[in-house]
Image 1 (tube, rainbow, N blue to C red):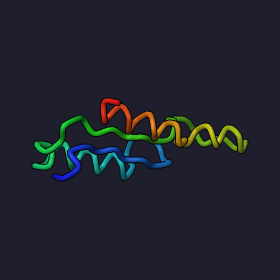
Image 2 (image 1 turned 180 degrees about the vertical axis):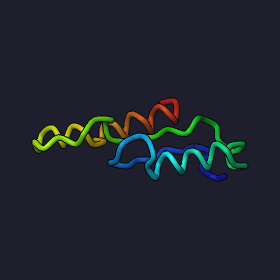
Image 3 (image 1 turned 90 degrees about the vertical axis):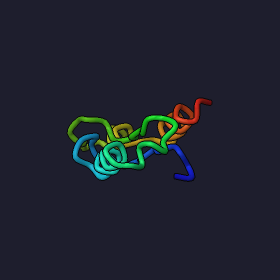
Image 4 (image 1 turned 30 degrees about the vertical axis):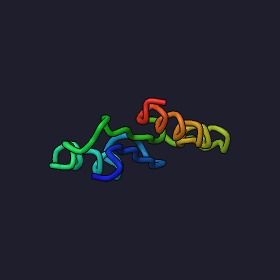
Length: 76
């Protein structure tokens, strides 16, 4: 109720993760009325996890992705 914004970050896939469950519970419950913007999820890319380290690094959320999402929610 104090923050009025919601951004979840997780390294897993977009569906069936902890962030998806948190967003679903917030959007379906009474806390939805306190949000000033839609909840945003920052997740890994929806692909099988690559074996190569550089590809793996690009398939999980990066700091720039988190910053972009937070600025989007804050209308900056």
